[in-house]
Image (cartoon, rainbow, N blue to C red; front, side, top):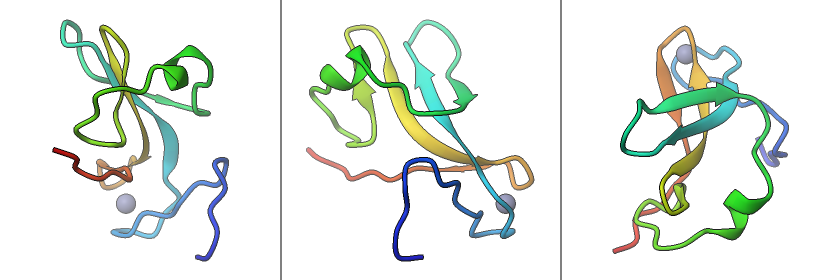
Amino acid sequence: MTERNMCDNMNCPFCGKEMQSGILSGDGRSAVTFKPGEKKTGWFDRLIGIDKLTAAKYTLTAFTIEADYCPGCKKMIFDTDIKG
Ligand SMILES: [Zn+2]
């Protein structure tokens, strides 16, 4: 795979089936959730701040991570880096 557009789903490296793209999010008070669908744009993206995991985009009260989920393997994958 040489190129990956935001709208392309990736295949699971474990079982090879198509994964579901979505947004992992949480706010520390409620459960962490995963919503299938397109990346949210707008104010979330403009509030990227003090990241530890670079995949996590923080707002004042919540975080979001773009992730791919395999319903078959019950696994999620997301691109990130660790910044101290
Ligand atoms: Zn899988």
